[in-house]
Length: 164
Image (spheres, helix red, strand yellow):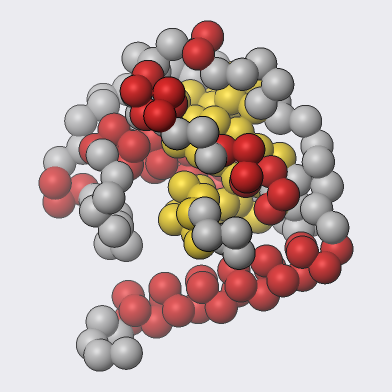
């Protein structure tokens, strides 16, 4: 299925219920399209804004049906890409690593050695696959436990937003 851009402007009340408000409107649109595409076409469960053991925070972390882990780093503009050089530190926490970009950002700025996704607020597509770099079993187990607990905690907050 070919990807085509769709309406790019979400309304303020169209934001997901769990947002830390650090992301730009463009980054949130890309995040939504990436997560929809991964869920619908790759059967992946997605987490947004996942803190990692090295102090970094993955924009999107996706878990596949066989336990594979992908990290997607969203870049909303050329400046965003140019000033952020921490992305190599995500590789040690994923089997595959991708950049994700909005349709208006030039794909040529991203390293050809990394996966690349284009997305808007409604859908996305993988433009370039990522090389497989399998996680060590101990790291995978630790990360899966963290994700299970994080997912349950996020559901709890939605169900009971009162004091923790």
